[in-house]
Length: 255
Image (tube, rainbow, N blue to C red; front, side, top):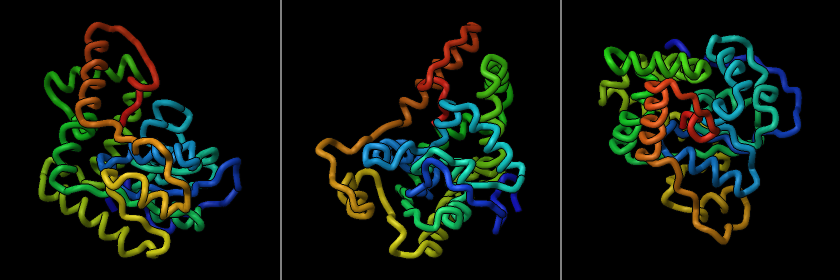
């Protein structure tokens, strides 16, 4: 099993909680998961857990580090307070979440595989890939200035770079094969009445129909394009080079 992958049949103990997850986002990162998060919260399925949540609430980071180490997981307790969970790290454990939350619906966000790869390569890949030379120096400076950022980088490297893609994300065809296999597995294993295969460009109607909610009288959120991701990364590296620490929820979140 690749390092960081989710073991089958991981034990958990249900403890209830103030919220129970009602929607599981099984789509990999860069398939519109940040837009999905905003949409679910608008529809009343929030708060919605996302990779950005680890920057917004650092207490979550230790919980996920324990999961990636392979420790036993109490999923309802880990996600206590959340009404939905999308994006990495949660999407890597969609099978376990389906078992822990048997009433939850599953949304598989998808997009054109080649466009997905190009987007992921220019954003999250640059964040989590092992780096050398000037990029490696800048990453080390960032990690010293923002220790929790360094921990999130390591978690992404273990879970996504090594665990999901076997350290071979840079091999385009391999990464595309993993992407397609992931989507095929979700389609094959999730019961049809529990699954929505969704592209964010489809807007509110299919999601609201699936979740039995009214369609909001406002545009569907389209957030976190690649340019905004790169802009935040550039600003963070400038602060690292000038030793200026400025942390906000937007700038510290890894999306």
